[in-house]
Image (cartoon, rainbow, N blue to C red):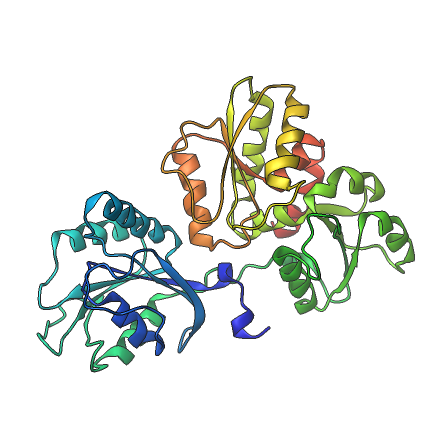
Length: 395
């Protein structure tokens, strides 16, 4: 896989923050060596966060986040400031750009405190040192000029030093595989499947299996019995799309491990046990309760979409209750979850580990149970213990 093909959720996210006209966008362009951000003398040129996946040496594949000014004014400006603060939840390394001719302001200090509270590695960049030199007083401070390029190389080195891999050394499934093990993937091709390609979790799982020098067999639910029969040895595990759990479960002998892609990704991103606990909340739902359905990406919804149609229909049938649903997608995530009885999240393949952990922590702090699509479906089909039995291989 080329570095440019690395999924966004696997990249280190570097967020650039600061007041209007501090030179954030100029510093972004200087660091990346590209005109990624529009630069203007007009205050507030950046009106929405801009995210760009790219290569940044010496770090490698990253996502650069250029944000609106944290001192924006008016009703619309307040919304832009809020969006900037929300970007902290995506950020693995924060770069606070300060105008050295003005110095650290109240807005800068407020943001810096929030960065420290979230325990995000950060660097304070005093820009415009060609106009007024600011002598750094701490290890995490540096003085640069986006215009002349002074100390930009040192800034890139400092960012690389602060960064760590977005998903460290974790593995999706290879942690339990040995050479020549067989893994069967069940991939339904229906109206909701993207034309001509596999979805990202399926692609990443295949790559992880291949990296372990194991054998990957991909089939559809209808062909699963024939696929299992044709193998010369028992597969180590069968991984299915959660939507096919009910059909696939009786086809797979009990002595073969069975799980789903979204359950594997919950384990991969460190939230499996919390999601297992959260799934039990399905049994406590009552008439009129509201469930938040949250997705980490935005996509064109099909007529039988899993998050907006299939799971809500399954929940209403399982509980026999009149349940209400609210949907969020992409970077949208409520500031408070108190209005919801529980949260059911997608597998989070497009989210970085930091953002996924932030969402889990929000739910945990407010005492709102959270689970994911695969966990919810497995629980409602009575096979959650079976679909999480692979955990023994990681203990």
